[in-house]
Length: 185
Image (tube, rainbow, N blue to C red; front, side):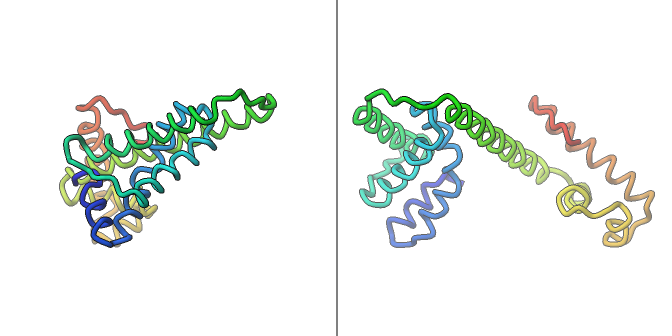
């Protein structure tokens, strides 16, 4: 994957699915990044929309000198700086609204981190043997019981328990090698 550059090229060539892929892949991270400038999650969401709008309307040239993500975030930073420059007056916000903003901001950040962790686990899952990958997928991601997995894989309950144990240990080992500890294993 080239971090969105091919999607952007497809968009420039007239394929609207390219921009949809970019929005889907980068919106959450960009919101959190721009929140560092705005200190308001709702403003950060608007700035993110403005960033994607600028990408769609102005169609700036991507030179490839940096990763697509860093190029996109630089555009977002410019949008945020423009916003701050034009809206630098102090706004009084009631304390209860600020508390709600902070709660929503933490919730969004936690869900983003959780999603990133899932993506990482899925990557490591793809490195496992097919048997291990299959049993973990059936039990943890599809929600099948051990008994149902045994029927699907045409194995005994004991074989499934052993296979599941070895698969979890293998995945856990791969994750821990890179300093990642996944609580649900």
